Amino acid sequence: MIEIQACPKCKSEFTYQDQDLMICSQCFHEWDPKEETIESTEASLKVLDSNGNELIDGDSVIVIKDLPVKGAPKPIKAGTKVKNIHLSDGDHNISCKIDGFGSMALKSEFVRKA
Image (cartoon, rainbow, N blue to C red; front, side):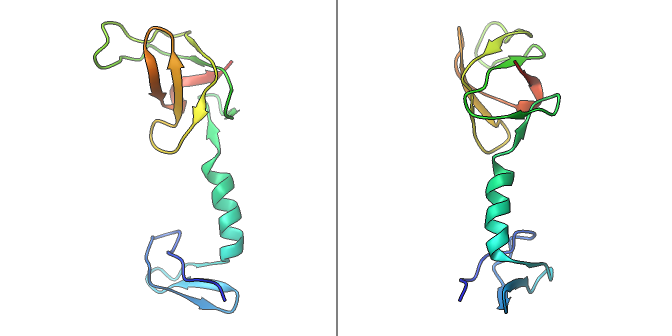
């Protein structure tokens, strides 16, 4: 028997099992929990740069526009190369270290793959 999971569509906890499928009683979304776990892990790791290229951990990227930094007297200039990035979840999905600024979190829409 499969344990009860929250609905991936509306996040409701009122779900029930019907044979191999899970069904949400709130939005009537049906899904196979075995397939859902595989898709969610693949989807959560996919991060695209400004040109649509997929980024992976350890890539090098180039900043495509000047980015202001709170508390710093100058922005990160366009053309700055950032090495050895780490991908994370959230709005700012790239964690990295930039020379002269230290540890930073960047949005993938402001970088391109080097």
